[in-house]
Image (cartoon, rainbow, N blue to C red; front, side, top):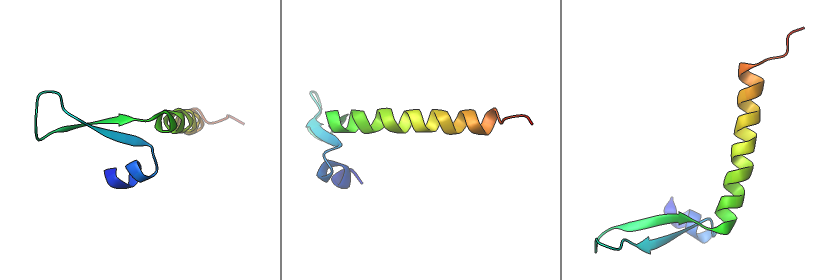
Length: 55
């Protein structure tokens, strides 16, 4: 999964500063933009689901 996200330039792996075996995963600028869009959509869906219009 991470390989796919890297290919889409949504995340980048960086070596962990104190562990030779671990990596840290960071969102790229492109990933942060997509996160913001997704968060806004999720909030709208939750509002519609939990606060349906009363008729």
